[in-house]
Amino acid sequence: MGRVAAPEEIADAVCYLASNGATFMISEVFTIDGGYDSSAQ
Image: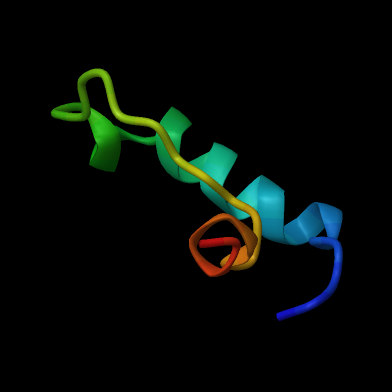
């Protein structure tokens, strides 16, 4: 994507993790970097 995330984009992930929808999430790592990490290979 080539840009820094907007605060709202990070907030969406935080809201999901704080919701009941994430009750079965255990020991996961969310990399919210617009694909930068996967494209650095």
